[in-house]
Structure formats: C-alpha cells, structure tokens
Length: 261
Length: 297
Image 1 (tube, each protein chain N blue to C red):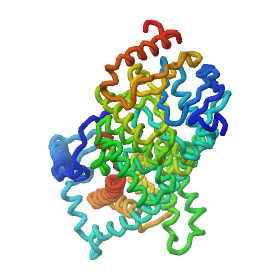
Image 2: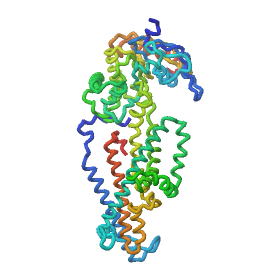
Image 3: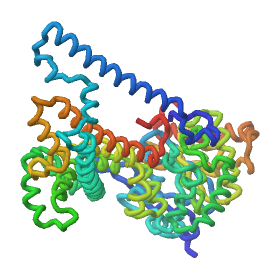
Image 4: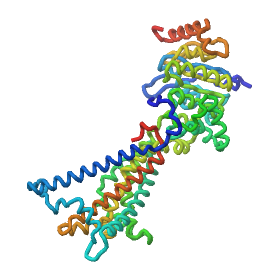
C-alpha cells in the first residue's frame, strides 16, 4: 500500500486562485492526515481554511495540485459518500422533521424505509436527541439543531467528518458541551475529523494536531502536535500542557502575520 | 437564528387553534358591515344633499345593498328562473374554464421555472420574452387564440377550450417568475450538502429546490387564481360565449337602466368565484407548506 492510500486525507501541492479579485487563497499546501486523527485548521479569516476543507470535499476545485481521500481523488470520494460535512449553521430543511432530516442522505443512498428508521433512531441516540424525531428544526435550540446536523453527517457512517466552524454560532457554554460530545462521538466511531475553527482553545482541546495557517496567500505556518491525554474532558482544560499548546498555536499565528496576539 | 426557543411539546405542533380563526372571521364580517354602512351612508347623504361628483348619487348609480342581494332571488325575466340560478350556471361555466386554465397555466409556469432554474443562459435569454408576453393586452390576443384553437378542439372542449387557454396565459406568468425565484433562492450550503451526499441535479431539484420553492409557488398561485377567473371572463368576450359570466355581464349591462341591481348581483357572483378560487389555494397551502411559524405570511 502506498503512503497516499494509507492516509485518510492527502493534500498535494494544492493552490487555489479565485478569479474574482485574483486572490491566491491557498498556496501550495501539502498535508497528510492519518486515519482516526482529529486535525484542526486554524488561522485568521481569509487564510483559506474553509476553502481547503471544500477542496477536500470536492466542493471547490483547486487551481493546482490535488486532494486524495482514502487514496481516491476527492471527486470519486464524494460520489462514494466517503465524508460527511457540517457547516457553521445547521442548514436543516424546515419542511422535514428531525428524523427525516437525518435520514435524507440515506434516502439519497437508496436505503429502504425500515433500515432508515433503524439507523435514524441510532443516530438520535448518538447525539442524545431521543424523543425529538418528530419535531421540526425550528422547534429546536441552536445547539440541538447543530447536533441534528452532526447526526445527519454521520448517518451514512462516513470514515471522514469535515466540519467548518460547526460551533462558531453557539454560545460559549453550549460550545464547550458540544466539544465534549464531539470527542465522545469521535472516540465511539473512530472517524477521521478535519475541523475548521477560529478558536485557539477549541482547536487545542479537540485535536490531535493543530494546523496553523497564515493569510494571503494561505499557507501552513506550522503544525502543533497536541499530546494531551485521551480521553479528554473538562479536566483537560486545566492540564498544564493545555496552556503551553495554546501558547504554541498563538506563536505560530503571530509568525503567520497575526499581529497583537 | 431566531429559533432559540425551547422545543415545544409535540402535541402543540400542528393543532389549529379555533380562537384566532373565529377572530379573523369576526373581523371580516365586521369589515363587511362597515363597508355596507359606508355605502348606505354615502347613498343616503348623496341623495339628501345632491352629491353629483364624481358621479350623481341616485337609485340607479348606487342601488341598495339589500336590493343587489335581493335581486338574486327574483326571476331573471318574466316567468323565468331565479337570477341566482342563471348566475350559478354562468359561474359554473366560467369556473370550469378558469380551473382548467389555472391548472394548465400553473403546470406550464412551474415547468418553465424548472427549466430556467437549471440554466443561467436560458434564464437570461428567455426571461425578457416571458415578461414581454404579459405586456400584450389580453384583449388583443384573445380573438387570435380563439381563431387558432377553437376549430381544432375535440367535442368536450368545444367552445370553452380556447377560453381556458387564455386563463392559462394569465396564470403561467406569476407562477413561472415566483417559482423561479424560489428554486434559485436556496442556501448555497444546502446545495453543497446535497452534493456531499452525492446527489445529482435531479435529486437536488426534487428534494431541495422544489420543496424550498413551495412558499413562493403558493404566493404565485394565490395571485394567479383570481387572475384566472378574470382571464376566463375576458376570454369569453371575443369568443362570443354566452353561457358564462361575461355573457351575463354584457346582458345585464344592457338592461342596467331598467334594473341596476341585476348587474351588481352579477358582479357579486363573479367576485365570489374569484374569492373561492383564492380560498381553495389558501387551504391547499396550509395543508402542503410546513414552515417555521414566523415564516408564514
């Protein structure tokens, strides 16, 4: 097996130039993410971290280079439903109940009703929303909506979860609780997670590696290996290494052009 | 995000509360009474002080409201059937044209919107012509539609089929424009999500764009439903169709001097048909469109 096939995500010399404004959003990015890793992409706004996530998901075409997912090109991987994606807003369908929102990817994958119902019930348990199957999205709080969105992304058991600032719109307390839940789910499923955030503490708390990016053009300023013990919980934030990692990430952000950090 | 509200218990979800309904019905009745009072009050005052601007107020220009309704239960001519029976037949005839035209126009409008939503190029090319189609006065094209279509029509459609086409002509436009807007107004991230589930164009259209466009579609249908009735009435004129509401209007227009309330009664029936069409669409909307309460118009 080649090295590319072994990596969950392999980014090779990816550059992205947006025609409009002639902006170089990503400049020759190389990054390998191993199976089961939890990797955060952090950087100032405009550093291309969301664009990089979309390149992995085949939602944006790189100008140069390529992204491989499970050894396949990103396009093939998308058609094979190799990844689930979660955005900052839950983007649930108003006209569908919670259960039918979670079941939508399964519906598209051609699962029959019985298997779908079973799987949706399982996912509701995973995100601790049993009893909300028949609610409509607008009857849920922001945090609950985001949990539905995570359940939907995981419903078809993708090996890779792509998350674009999933908790960015939530209040601090909800965010920390969902951070904990996400780690529990990650342990339970053993999936690979690529997580875009602009919160330094969140990136250190969640990740096995933090990829710090610099802006215009988007480059990797450095990578922090987070060696905090697993499984992590509220006590992790008080671990002495936690503060040290935060300092490391902050230094890299500063070296990448973030003044005043 | 406006829905931070705690999850409501399921039982409260789709129950229709009778109180707001009764309240709005009472408001409507009250407004009707107010309008009645204003009419009768203006008539009373006008006849007393001799208002002659913008028109002379008298028994002929402003018959009593109760006379308009009362006329419905008078014979339409000596020893003839009651006016309401004559008008009910006419209304049914026109309603059939309007309903068929409405269905036809809504289908065509929706289809146009779907095709145009899939191609920006087509959208740019075709939209000006679709808009232009509505700048042609319906009275100018109605005779041509009748001349083109009528001779070809099979028996069950003979006579009124062309009128349905004219009603469809008035219906398709708001449906096409609004549905197109709805189909293309989808959150781009919702489309990205669909792509991440490996959904093709067709699935994105039917599972995402079409349901998302339903509120837009129903807004258009509510505009189009009464317009289809008006279109049918106007379409009857150049077709020389006597059996519909247009025939009744022309007829009672001629006898206005001798019996003003007859024309008014006809107008009331015509308006009632339009309102009925609107109401049917509004009920269908309630049954079909499920949205957050704050988004319901």
